[in-house]
Length: 181
Image 1: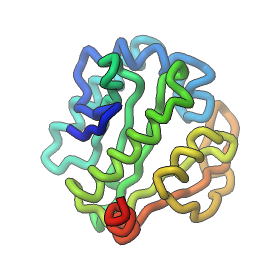
Image 2: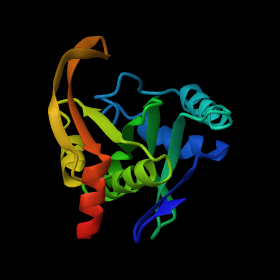
Image 3: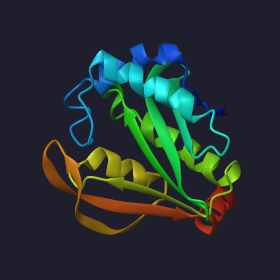
Image 4: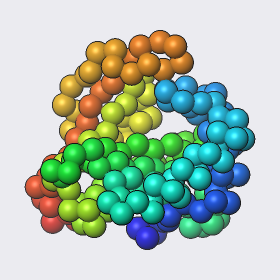
């Protein structure tokens, strides 16, 4: 389990589907996602699939529940997929719309980046964001990820091809940043 003073990340449990569903079914929250808004069945399927995926012998998918310590409330989830066994992982996150602007996503992403480099010993961590998703871009920049460029119309979202901004952090950048803290 990864944690700091305000949030902790933990493995997803079956009961989490009911905490995930309010934000995964909210049109505003998922407007930049290629999936959603979810039905209850979709949310339950997602959680069941996450539990199955973590039992794989060569695990490449890590999905954690983001919990705010003060309230012990699930505020979102964060995921990392090892894209390349040469040391590349891709992260993504979603936060309940009632918790936007509180810095919880930034803290969760920082914890996940630490997990990627410490536990998974990755060389590179990447994330993509729709250029219009200013909140997500701010999170990626606050944690020190570097914008590499924009992939043009690479993701089908709600029937429309969208651009994706690509951000990354390298192991040596993470080590340097960690040494300054």
